[in-house]
Image (tube, rainbow, N blue to C red; front, side, top):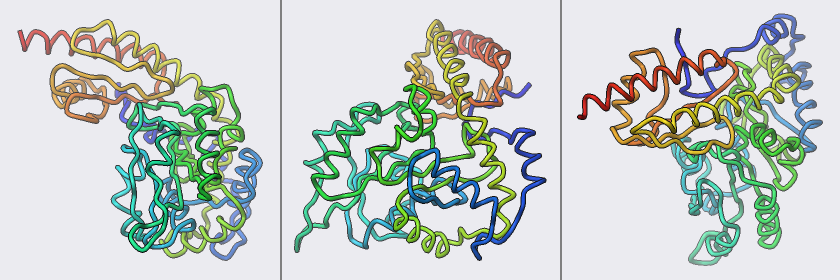
Length: 344
């Protein structure tokens, strides 16, 4: 029995999604007459309270076309030190948009609002001007950590004082909402735009939705076209996204609960120091090299990622059951004993 805890991107579409995809009414989204895509974008606006939305193939594209729409070449964009936009998007802000990224330190992915004014640059003959703040909630490399609303409102105050915009990498923003007992509208209220992933914990096979003002989304559509993200009969994919938004948000709490229990069990084992998870991601410090752990776990069909030389990442999602989680604890326990014996 394969237990795949590498990422919540490995989720398979539900039967309801497959049924919706088969029955989807189709048009041509590039020509502007794709009814199912339009229904998805309308639903995203209703849920988030934003004026407009555009369906895109990936969260990375959503982030990058937002940056492009907000900035001009040479602008400075503020990002957290280990943000996905900085760490995992192949230098796209520089390559595609000609902007500079200025990173900001944090505590487990959460930026102290008081630091931001010190990192903000005023345009001059010598310095680029800061025009955009990019946030990430929840934060991937910090282990699914939630940025609370108090901090988010402080970022809003900073942005308003400086006259800059805020874009949220909301790949797991629904997790942040569930963890805080809030709606996605409340979570996104302090930001100007957000890229919301449908293909992680929500289980759709492909796609994200970028939401924001009408002006921003109009510009984002042009950038989507430039980058080759205009899809034709994409209602087949959007249909699964509609099911995701209508039926898969509340159940994220189950993933959070399994992740907490798994971490509690691993804390009892020698050689491992798990974090305290806030959502569906567990980071685990290892005494032995993480590569040895990953290889040993894989041999027992438990799959995770080596995120750092001495750190593993386990991610919980719809395709991981209570029984599989119990089996995963058994496997980690066995491997822990094996590695302890080998190092003795």
